[in-house]
Image 1 (cartoon, rainbow, N blue to C red):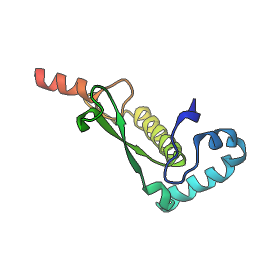
Image 2: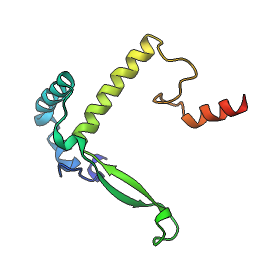
Image 3: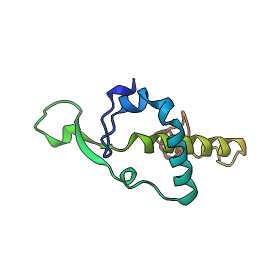
Image 4: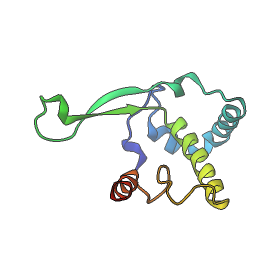
Length: 119
């Protein structure tokens, strides 16, 4: 559920966006369209809070942490919408070659590297 996500630079918790989604939809739609039309994002959307996230083993070893960038959830939503539309367009018009693996569902870049190294 989205309520477990940490807030980004705007300090707006996912729970608020989730609970007020109907009330915020028109305003977010307006902001998304304005940002897209003018190639201009709200300032907070260009900022990330970078935090360490423990993976495993010894907690005192920095190698056992990965960095996570907390960004604004509104920006993630807009990014998802744009990416979905781009992918639909690329797939509809068969623009990507069969050797294109990045940014395609169920195709991993690692798979492409394995195929390339076998040739």
